[in-house]
Length: 492
Image (cartoon, rainbow, N blue to C red; front, side):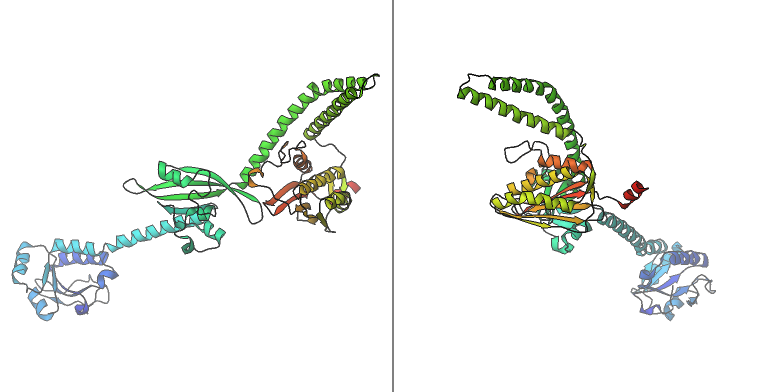
């Protein structure tokens, strides 16, 4: 730790003291000194009043000469520019103050202890720095591994930092988004309020409190994704909001489940309503139709009377059909289930629908995967689903277009898809189109797509919607295939 070649150091030191004091000083120096201190300090000699060699207190490999008094030490080492007096004895300290040359600094015992500790305070700094780096790395790792997108904003809403999730989604480096408005990253727009109904950042800056809002977007596949955006203020020492943490969380799956639950509750309400209507309306309706038929067979009626009675009969029949649709919609499907070749079903259905397509100037195309599995369902109900989808597509292409019906096989499902080039479905009604009684045409009961989803749900399948405004819509039915094990069990 110490070197005899101390003359090349900034501080060339000679130490004066008796053996007990030197041992104490030496131990303190060994315990406290470090590489940074040793780069500046070199102890080159020791003066022991009363003579005698320096005890074995220095580390191995050192050879520090000792002298009987400080005068001999200074005579033999003229490069010494700092003397440390380690005994603290007033008489010796007074003599040194009076006789040391002007170019030599005297450091008394208490001051020496203070400066050694001061010079070695970098140990504490290094320890604090290492602890800070460890905490910083741990925090960064946690934030980067979160699925949520996190942005750190200044008081103007501009990005000063982000987590890895944001960068992975954008495919950009952090330096590329520093200084951008958080609107550009979270909503793809630089509008002042980001396109939010209520801008959470603005509310946080105004209220100095947490804020949140919900937003949605159509991804590159044409699917809707829902997000919840949260903002949290960060205060500086004087209580000013200096920064804001903005978090965007994907809640698409949760929103989907909420919508399905709402639809289930709506179906339950419709079931109760239809039962009431069947009891309270159908019986009077049957009576009205019966008397109308009786009047129609009565002789002596003029043409105007018969026309009015005919209208009564037609409207009664239409009302009865609506009631039947309601009852059929709310009841579980009890149709006979069989093995369905969906390719054959598509061919037969599209032959029937080809004429409406031609009349409307729509090019109908069919692309069938011959390796698609058979499905376990009622063929008439699946055909009804396909007709519903084709009719909806034709209504979306009033001026003509292209209709594509395809079948395919995935790992878990046989797939039947209908894709058109119509006007697409606006984002604000995307959640409503599978709801009962919702219609954009102003006619019909609005049960087509709701009935389609109900049928597919009951056989254990799924319905997927992809749509872009102005570019068309694709609805895919995922149908459970028949497993080979079922045939084995039946044959056994």
